[in-house]
Image 1 (cartoon, rainbow, N blue to C red):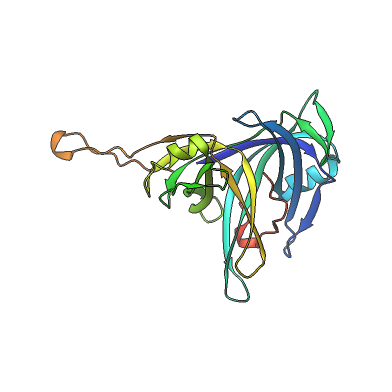
Image 2 (cartoon, rainbow, N blue to C red):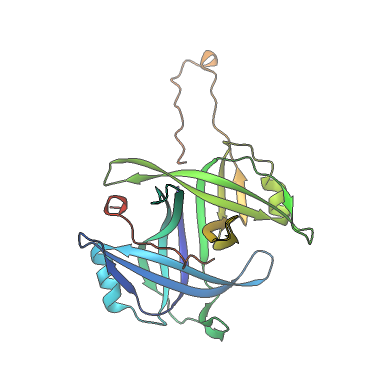
Amino acid sequence: MNAGYISGLLKGDVDLRYTPNGVAIASLQLVGERTNNEGRTVFSSIKVQFFDKQAERYAETLRDGDPLMAYADVRYRSWETSEGEKAHTINVNGKKILRVLEPETRDTEFGPVLCNCINHFTFIGNTTLAPELKYTPAGDAYCSTSVAYSIWDFKQKEETSHYIKVKAWREQANALVKARKGQPLLVEGPLAWASWTAPNGDPRGELQLVAEDFTLLDFIRTDAASTSRPTLKPKLDIDDNTGQDDLLPEEDLPF
């Protein structure tokens, strides 16, 4: 399971492009500022993409500065480069968009933004890595893990696996480090863009989830010898992304 909401001012007009087979893809960058769970004001800039007729409709009707809120999910895509290296990207795929009424806005160093914007996603999945507690030079605790979840692919008529990296800070990090590899959990928080420099000097970056709240879960185990009822095996569904190339290959379009 994964779902979330993003609100912000539309920065620039909608970027409308087409695949070689003529499928429309619209990219909308929503910018705002919000207060995080530590009481700090943080900037939010998330690119959301829409497809097909919905993409063309939004490109015709939406304009720079419009206050909007999108309902979306998050999808992982991997491929092999022409040099034989593995690469991946995280895309935010919109389902629906609404206009925000009576918005409060202000000018910032990043330009006009929507005040008290929403950037909140919820994932239920399984950890693929055991979290490791680390510390910044200033002594702040943090830890990272990756969460695997599944999405039903209507085109392929099957579930597809997706992944997102999760980072927790301070008190949340000290709690998340208790999770074991493969542990199911529910995790909530904003999406944020993390950037770094690769060993070869190339810039790298990816969209991550900042864990502001989470719940450790576990599978239900039933002792078949202690009950005559049939056992039901549970099936669990396993802030700036503007630097990504979100033009997907035809076979990866989410419909």
